[in-house]
Length: 502
Image (cartoon, rainbow, N blue to C red; front, side, top):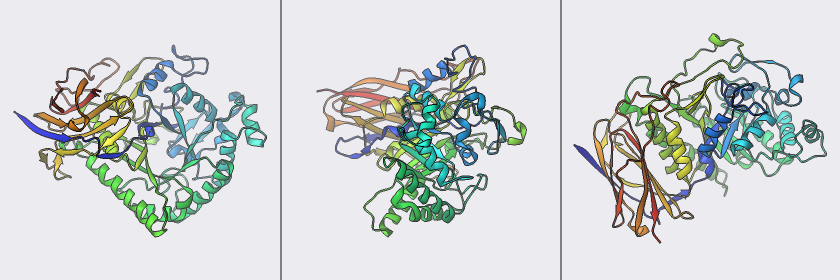
């Protein structure tokens, strides 16, 4: 038995242009993300700078446009000066966000060099927990000013002649969280963020700045925090951040795969708050959204006490399975459906810590199930998002009603003359007959129908079995008379790529 669903993708029903930064990621000084992740001197693949080439190759294959650094909770206690200059002179410090010892062997310049090798821009974060205006403006001067000032000349003396010219900067991290070093009220943070933004822009007027939203929609501060912070910073920031994580720790897969509906609601709510402040201020400026932390995160209860003052201990090294890949796919589709407002997003994180890429110290690398939908979206989800007009049977779960079995969206890349349909069949036991109406584009042909599925939704990739769950190109999509027809297997991620015939 199969269910039936359909979608209309009309080239004139344009939702928004995809900002490439929608497919960003995040590397924090947490666990083995940096040490043992991107940086491991002595590893068989390490270059002269200590960067693992196998990791770089896996990151390059994702085509990651921007990577947030150095945190995260870490940044709220970080003195950036500790991570620059000769490594032999850098001091080892106690890192209070995660209760580890930070060697400072990797800092601003090293990460900038690594990001360049990875083909990524850097989304830099400043410390508004224990520090503020002075440290932030000095960091901008150090990173972006060409020469002729104290901090820019110090960078040059450190062997970095050309300025980094980081464009996008986060004004702190999760500042309403009681776990945050230097947590603040909305008024305290809003005032500090605004004054810091002004000073940073006076050093470099080209900066794009991201104000902190609340740490999640479940926070007691949510909504009021956003409104207050924007009221205080509106003229001096460009983006407001959102953070969210999901898991299936209660073992309810049908509900887990519906959680992207929560993401839809979260994005819509924050956009509405931004527009309220815009109206209140009678402003013509639109604030865009930066979902600069999102992912499936199962191990949030891990205790820092177990790793007190160790150097780069394993932390939050979740093993992702087939259903996690489906959840990530649904979230990616949600992001595309909000491409008119969400211009940046960072899957958190990139290496080892709740990440699509896993390494072993001194050993091999393998790719988690979540790597693949992220890669597919990044490679093929560039262009114009079309309003998805979907007709699908629905179900109710423990938290959600009217969940469509079909989660889908299409992206038109006019430059390449290609259309990509991303689709998830949420049904856990039935295949889906999908029909997509593309008649507005004229004749089309299928380039490829990639599928990711597995009989066991708990199946995962591991060191011993790195190819246990992989995508394949045996999808059934065909194009005829301006329509695609395809059979989507139960609980599957699908990428249907088409060429518009000239």
